[in-house]
Length: 415
Image (cartoon, rainbow, N blue to C red):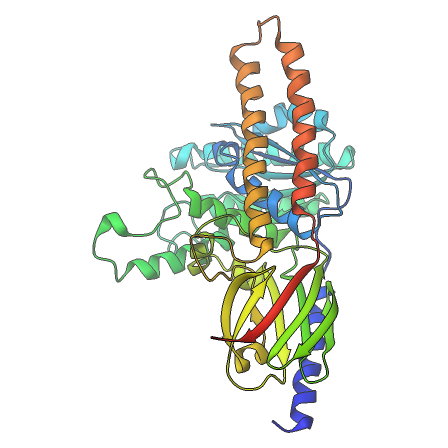
């Protein structure tokens, strides 16, 4: 490749990375307490945990706390009624609000009376949050199992549109979860066209067509993260193998570069880490574009001798790539040589973090159930205090687990 063309390509990479880095800061800041308010879809705690793990991994230096205030069967009016106890009492600085389906009785009460009740609840929540300096984001309801080609203008979407507009008018934020999820749902339905067995068709929903399954919860997390301006790039590194020098270091530091024979070695210390959630997590990328839009952990190596190369990190095989692939750049966020095991150490860290986050929410759920059904227990106060202390310990362990450390990379000719 002529030198002038290589320079142009490199300039394009540099400008692209810089542009993405400036594309808006993530809405969750150091010191924030984020509360998720909503109905049973929120109470399931799944989409909130994905957002929590993304934040911990991507911004390990920001101390952000997460509280789930979902309640099955709840409506916007119900959320407003318990706002003080379940949101503000936790010291919330950021609130996401997701209602709509129960407000219209799963469609059986899709009329102006119930729409006005929904809008009154949204108004009250936003006004109260603005008064208390809480940054509030009203979300449209999660998409239902209705035909995505026909639900764009149905009652639920148009009602939520009015709620989003009202929030913005009052100075709050708005995230159109429903339309973002509908794009994912269209991909699911398209894939199902070639699947003849109904039992094997993909879906975002449980059998009722309202509650979300795991894929649906991931889709909702993706929609909210995008609405919170979550950046796509984790970090990007470009290394010139001919000169053994780092050309691009965006969100990371490259050091100790050595090139001997056909083997390149270096250390990479990232500012944040990609989001992974255990075995087969990457299968969700068929429908939810996390890999390309939220999880770009990039590596490019220029001027390698043509051939096939193995990528090892901390002694573990991550994958095999051609010199041409490495020159163009590869996203190694979820790369693994064995799908039954984590790929790079960042993958193992993320998997460990997921278990800790799950444990923290199991602890929180135990307290919700105890308060609801065992409030007369004379030992409740002491138990609640111990649970609070344990939760703090888990939060500290979460941050330690998600903290980046230097990784040793080796790129060598494939055997």
